[in-house]
Image 1 (cartoon, rainbow, N blue to C red):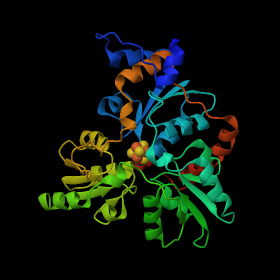
Image 2 (image 1 turned 45 degrees about the horizontal axis):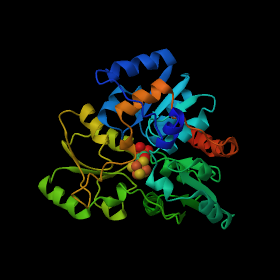
Image 3 (image 1 turned 90 degrees about the vertical axis):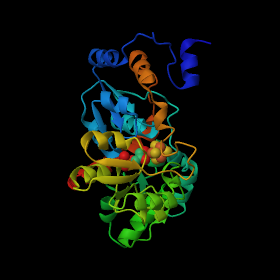
Image 4 (image 1 turned 180 degrees about the vertical axis):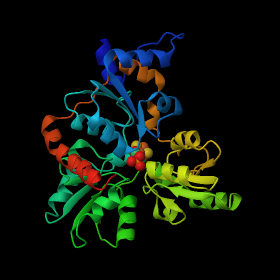
Length: 331
Ligand code: 13P
Ligand code: SF4
């Protein structure tokens, strides 16, 4: 099999790396030589977060990408994040270390079925979470992330008929705090859905002073136990500013790296999943990216994200709308 054919089949460049390679310094060298930047989501492993030029949540990654003058953007996160960056920066090369890094939430919303749902409700405004494919964004009026979802929903009159997809937990949460009755798509994230209420309750007994931080992709029974509900960056900012010392964190455990780095004297306890035999509070998709794959991805400039130009032309509008509203709101 030809080399490129094999890479395409694997979803990443699987070239062997000499065992004595200093991955960090080689990555720094490729970056300078190629005018590349590395953006990483908080759910990446610590080594990838540490070498990134910027680490952030879904909104901040999109905002950062929209501003950069780099020729190459390496998005260390999952596929929909790479797509969002490519749609915003069509003339740049956008790389992800492993194309197999998908998202169970995006997968729970197939574009053809979502388009039928939208067509069946022509009088509804369509608000989609950023965790969607480009094809879903193409039939969307405005994209949101967990950082701006509530404010963007609130920017519409209370009587506006709204379809919100694909995350039923985030949608239910916004309905509950705004008194709206948005029509929800029935999707979910496999990581955030599996936090155990019983185990969080047990942790609260063990650490009675701990603050429970939860991402709105968690089930309502978990959110009911939380002291703070917010996006990854909102939870991080809360922990940094808080004068409390202990935090139980119900979101993907990669965020603990930045929390611990910014608050070395505080204690962060990852909320456990239902199944104690697995590391299910780690996103298996996010963790497909490794330093080795990042090195090869920069070296061979593969795999790069492509988005059908006709879909991109439609999908860019709701993403720009999100960025504009977020700027107006100072987010
Ligand atoms: P945020 O970082 O925007 O809160 O998103 C969480 C998430 O699940 C990303 O995949
Ligand atoms: Fe998707 Fe969930 Fe992984 Fe985020 S944590 S990328 S929503 S599967």
